[in-house]
Length: 225
Image 1 (cartoon, rainbow, N blue to C red):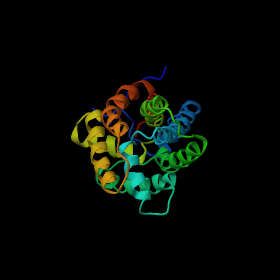
Image 2 (cartoon, rainbow, N blue to C red; image 1 turned 120 degrees about the vertical axis):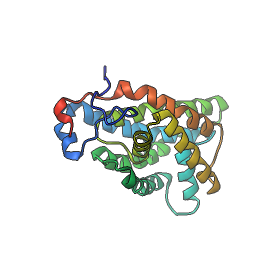
Image 3 (tube, rainbow, N blue to C red; image 1 turned 180 degrees about the vertical axis):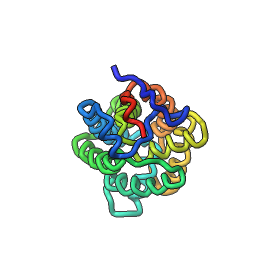
Image 4 (cartoon, rainbow, N blue to C red; image 1 turned 90 degrees about the horizontal axis):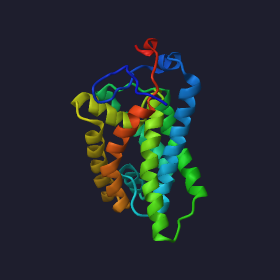
């Protein structure tokens, strides 16, 4: 079983704040690299599940879909473009991008487009509800996997952990605050809002806070700065 990393950068995160080279030198790569890749692929798949559920998207994806109404990009391509824009918000928070940060910026969007191509929208309301609920839970697990691999946070989750560290607030409170803000912007741009949006915005912070300690790989002491 994976255990929580004891190298802490602040009370809210419990994660190692190390650069790309230190991430590679920290060891346990045979465990950490697969967790990173699986987490990112599952993250994109969770996005697709909620899209096909058609009961409301995750707040960031309400924004992404809203943007697609104004630019000639697929949903996955929009996710990739938005990721690099969000990275600019890391500068005042002094977040350290890692190998996982760049991988996240690209792989989530690609896997989302692939999953959307493989999934059909069910006609049954119960099946759509199952897709929506499964998408929320899978998203939380995927977040714990790729953040816990200690290769750096993705753009959006780096914003979450950076704000949590700077403000001293819990991951749950910060994540929920961010989700509510972006869904309003996405709705103004024409993105779809529904019951799934509300469920995601309220549940994802506590679910990530619950899963992250169990899915974070403990690094040796030399894996610090």
